Length: 352
Image (cartoon, rainbow, N blue to C red; front, top):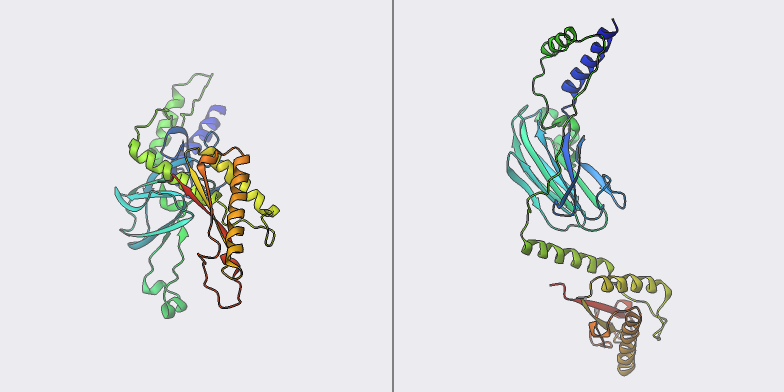
């Protein structure tokens, strides 16, 4: 009797996994932005992820990683579906080996759109690749399901359909490498035939869902492409860490405290990338005494250069110049001051 109860439980587990376990996608997680080192595999409901300092799986750098999802997509309606991907940084999407979204580059939460025609209840191969190469990561795969005229609401009929895309729900995905035979009668026979062959001491071993061998993947990009990608990453960091302006006491070269933090961050960035150079340009508003403005702009640029030198940056990597009011962003009306003209510009060299 105990054996029959035990087999009944196992049978229900097998039937449940077989009938319902196929929804979702297989996700492979890699350390490095170019699938450099395989770390883990999981089955996930859909593609809807955001993270910052906490990685999506342990063992990878949350700021420099890559993910590959595979499975099948099975729409329940025929028609032209509008896909979109909200991503930071890069993404590629294939349906039946057709590349429908190709944004394999650094993006700051970009949104990309594509169309694909489906036949209802047909399974389509799906592959999605993603990489994150700087700070937070985000990847969401969305679509807009087509509607017939009968399905339109009165507001949609009058004003047109909503353009809103929604994250693709798990019920439209089918995981790869699953049992394809859903015949429950065959499962019953197989389970109870096994029972007849067992002795009183019963040991049941449920097979693992999937065994994954860790192998170094074949490089997906050339050395030249790798170098180009690294340059893009450094350029994006430069954009993020370079101060947009430095605030001084009025008419002086004393740097205000809020700007010290920006300079500290920039100094560390320059120390991390010793091949880069920087030119510091001082500018003032053209209103007022031209010679005094020119001297003030030079003094402020030199002050910043001196600050960076004291932080350990070789003075040969730093150039400083003041232009006074000769290069205004806004040409002022007579007697009118424009604060935007009073600025410090950092021009980082060596990013090419």
